[in-house]
Image 1 (spheres, rainbow, N blue to C red):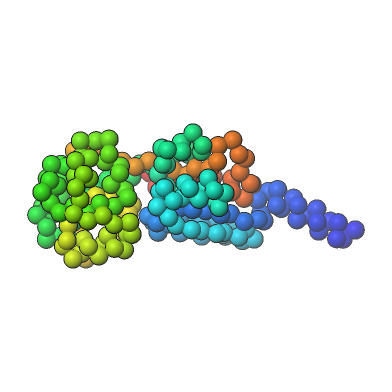
Image 2: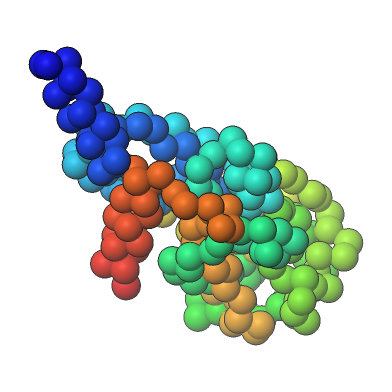
Length: 221
C-alpha cells in the first residue's frame, strides 16, 4: 500500500510538471543574456526536473526541434519551416553595426545608415540574412569574409579586419575594443521567441518553463 501511494504521488508530480526532463535548443545570445535568470528560477521552483541545454544558430535550433532532439527552441524562426512549428514571440531584437571603437563608423553614435557600410570590408555572419529583404541586402553580396562561428567573428572584428551587423543581444555587454551602433536605415529587428512542433501538446514541465520564460521577458520591457 505504501508503494502504491508513492507511485501515485510520483505520477501526480509528473503530471504537474514537478518531475521529468526539458530539452532546450537556443541561439547563443539568448543562452548568455536571457536564459540564466530563467533557468535559475525554474530550478529553484522545480528542482527535480532535469534540464538539457544545447546552443546552435537559428537554423540549427529549428532543425533540432523538427528532428525531435529537443522539446522547445528559442531564437528567431526560420521562415522555411513556419508551417511546421508554433511560434510564441517574446521580444524584438534590433540590428546594429559592429566595429572597433576607433573606426570611423564609431562616430555615428545615434545610428548608421546602410550606405555607410559600402566600401567597408564586410564580415558576413549568419544573422546578416536578416538584411536580405531590405535595401541593405547589397552589403551581403560580396563580403570580404564569411564566418559561421561567433568566436571567429569577434576575433576578425577586434583585429580590425572588417565590420559586420549583429542583433543587439548577440553583442557582448562589455567590450573594450568593439562598439555596437544601431542601424537606423533600414531599421531591422529580429523577432525572438519560443517555438515548438505545431499541433503537439507540450509536456507539463515544458509548459511551465515557457510560462516562466514569457513572464520574465515581459518583466524586462
